[in-house]
Length: 99
Image (cartoon, rainbow, N blue to C red; front, side, top):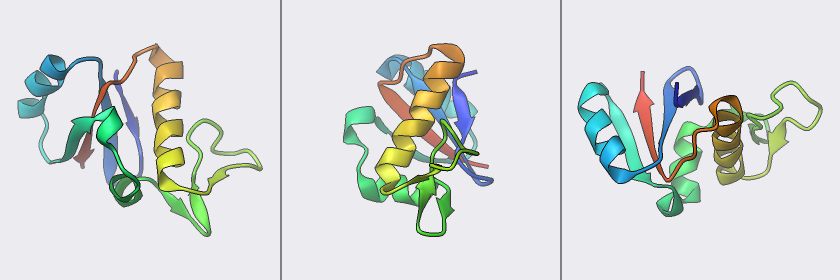
């Protein structure tokens, strides 16, 4: 699967090309973000990643002592890295779906 749960409300999907992203969109119910990876900004990521106290979740090591990231974009990148680590699926385009 090319997705990872960002929070209890949002799921992140990764796609290697624009055409595969566009063809998957009709099958998703509530798409809140569909962009190229290079177009994602801090404000976009802040809306979707899991916030913990004074930082954001590290999706690569959620249970370690260093589980907090300073910025939401760093947290978003760790989610993409965890997704790549689990299935080797590279991301050039991302979709965030509200569940």
